Image 1 (spheres, rainbow, N blue to C red):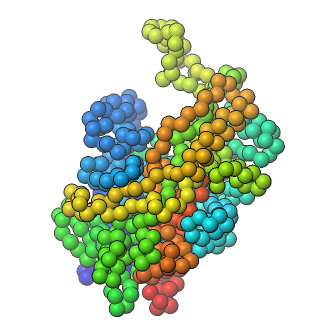
Image 2 (cartoon, one colour):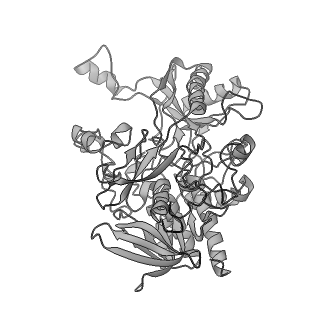
Length: 561
């Protein structure tokens, strides 16, 4: 629009930003979506989607140069030849670490919706009540019943495959037909259920991979390639590119502007409303102002909070939304990288079908019903069984025809499970602006001051030991345990820096994701989370975003914004 004025501005184009754009445009608003990175077009720009391992110069592995160039990304699995272009260039986008923090980012259209693990679970009723009951952090301003219908709404559009299990601890959703567990997983699951008398469960991991075609969305069902994070040319998994962006574009109400770094929200102290945002063009370094009645911050948990902090004025010297003193605090993630694995005997005449893009899931069983531990909250497991392939080592054969023959036969069956544990919202776990260090655009960077504490450390002991005990109970042989060490951020589920709450004195957002200090500004990405549960959070972001957009449009119509 010529005068840069829209009904709504959406900052960020990842999972929650894509949903915000879709919902607001479908409800009739003109929207500009501002993305700090480059555009990635669906199918056309998935340059590695069809490549085989041998077509990568270094067989997908990280080179010494990559390790040098990506000091953060190298800390864990994301550093790979196949997805290198999707991750932020660490050196261009620095941050400082008072305590170690691994921040894995994707600055482009679609954000991390292109690289996410697609595991999609609902929080349960206890997740929304635990803070209040245990006197931790603040109470969620909503309960499960208030979001359940929005979970369904998000599931139906995104397309979540899964099995209905009828468990309180992991509520069922509106699922597409579930993918199948393999023979070993089914047998291990049956033994676990029997051994623990129906108190522990293992079933197929619920994921945003469609198992039926969606012609109305131009999406084809999953082809079992398991190359999701390279970008799926079939649109078989949910991403901004495959699902929400086409829906928003179809309304003719969306303008997408890449290379647009939002530096601050502009605030009018007389109306106590935001008027728009200031944008730095990432290519030309020009400053542009966009105006709107409603602003949705979906720049990812830390960047949405960075924008609020950088929007300091004489009224809000610590940033917009800082009146409670909680902005930037209560950082959470999911701690993981520990579990168990082992060898499964028998089944030599069985194999598996395709490359399934999800594993198995074991929902939380600690601190529910009559189970009580010396820590609060709990964890779930993700994992799976498979047969060793041609890449395995054959100890007695190092070379020659015998080795080739041995590797042409599948190896032993193995199974492994990794725990994902809940991290509590500690006020002292925080991010803040470090004005002494600037990025390549001259903007202040974030400083990370976050760690896990005793509650998480106690939980990790169980996370490892319970995995071992469960696998052994299911007849798995040579069971080993591991704890590969964890630093906050590695879960890539950072959240909590602009939490929702019931009281403006102790929270940044209200129960509809509005900033208390500026009610026409909404934050619906990970920043808004009041507690973390132990399940992957993305489905909750989708549901909260759809709910907040519905509320925003209704309030707009009433003249309240």
